[in-house]
Length: 382
Image (cartoon, one colour):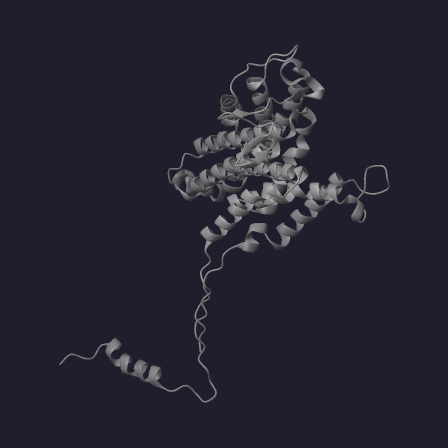
């Protein structure tokens, strides 16, 4: 006769323990499960709100929102490079300048000393993005082999080279004073201050650009989200976290680094085109080292390696100086330069620095972590 197994001898005791009544005064707590959130519902509500805003906001806030959209497009590209792949870049503003001035040259007409090809607007946008990608491709062999501070210093040189070219290539850039930006024409609609009436509602340049910017931002965000969730995103994260191990597993590290650098440059070029259309004038001084540092602040404050973090950080960094400028008279210590207070631009940079320090110390995942979805709570033991 075979001996009983351990499971057979232990089962009656376990059943008896489970059947024992709970001690008096003891209440067994049930599992608390949070109701699942519905990201699609929230995204739809946010989309409807953004679609309705041009009917209620004035030109100042529409322009500020467009600047935030353009910054978000560029920040998404930089987050793919720095946040997801771990490649530090200090030359993002250079590729924004390539996109902005590339559109001006391709879409503008030859006027006096300024060179222009007079291409259709949509073709000029595509060409400007392609030029930014080509500039990134020329630099990609270096980006594929350098990393960390070495790549940051190498990309910083692009900013100084770009400033030299923008200030001295007068026939292309207009020199120090820049050059006007030709309006975009698409599907018979010209994105300038000429009124376009749709369903008895007049739309001017800011309103028309608002919807164009929403479409561009949505497409760029969805594409980047798909890249991060698919196989390329996993390879990029592996390169960021364990470069040598990723190479051992068969990931072509140099090729991925170079490819992501080109993709990031194209995002920056598209952001530069949108910025040029909003400002309607390109100025070399704007595309300097300060702008590159602001883009780094965007992805750190919003959240490294996250598309939504790039958007949140871009909105924060872009709208903060606009708000300080608009309400400077009502805010303490903020005033116009030369009046004894701190200028809104300088105050915004102080607040950027404070936000970066606070996030690095207390919230490494960025502002997007504040709204991160928590999983259901585990069952509480009795």
